Image 1 (cartoon, rainbow, N blue to C red):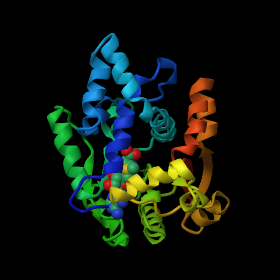
Image 2 (cartoon, protein in one colour):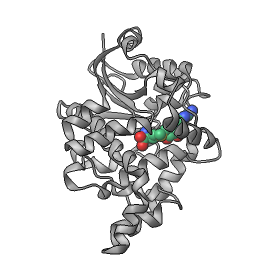
Image 3 (spheres, rainbow, N blue to C red):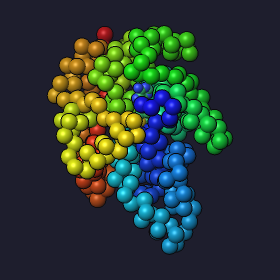
Image 4 (cartoon, protein in one colour):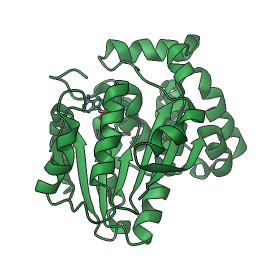
Length: 300
Ligand SMILES: C[S@@+](CC[C@H](N)C(=O)[O-])C[C@H]1O[C@@H](n2cnc3c(N)ncnc32)[C@H](O)[C@@H]1O
């Protein structure tokens, strides 16, 4: 993470969610109109043209945006998997949500009508949070989420439960923690310390959902995904850490969580998307360091 700059990767994934209207209706799994506010000068004009123009101009914008299409579809699957788990938790009466590495995640606004008044806490790097607050204000959008500035590599993670408590989090009641698209950017030590902090603030019945990349893919991503890895490295957010899926249940268990499911994006794409779009997610493997989606529950 670069201290002085909002996260590049957070802006990219938010923009990809915002580009959902590029997809035909049957391939849309989420809707995030605010996502485009974070697109930045390189994508915004194209995206606006795509959304507002008709005829040849729209076709031209669609063509220019074609290279990001695999990411747009991919983000449908990643974000939908987490939305479903979160909404199921809330449907069971869960009333607290902590979003770690929240970036430009707009869940607190997007899903507000379906969160049943659940309290949302968003934790991220301060420069990213400042940009998010500014963009939401410029859009005239009010978010009820509570923000907490935190640097996962520097701030002592043992202090996270107390800081959340100061902001109104109640560790005696179940919490759903979202850690979407973050672990790959952290050191192994910071990941372990974060999961220990999550366990400390998570009452029994709490759940943790997170994405991770297989460790062999971080080490040898292949040519195209390797190029994407170089881009994020140049942006100051290199891929650092992956997991071995076979070792994940034991790794979580010693930290107080039982793995409930660990989904491969191909499987989710095949379940939710028409065949041609699921194929694009599968082919995207060559371009994207494909993550998995792991849902676990607090034991004890
Ligand atoms: C790919 S973005 C994902 C953002 C968001 N979860 C989403 O899916 O839209 C990665 C996020 O991790 C955060 N992050 C990475 N390293 C961090 C660190 N050391 N401390 C705080 N936040 C960090 C970045 O600020 C960024 O928001």
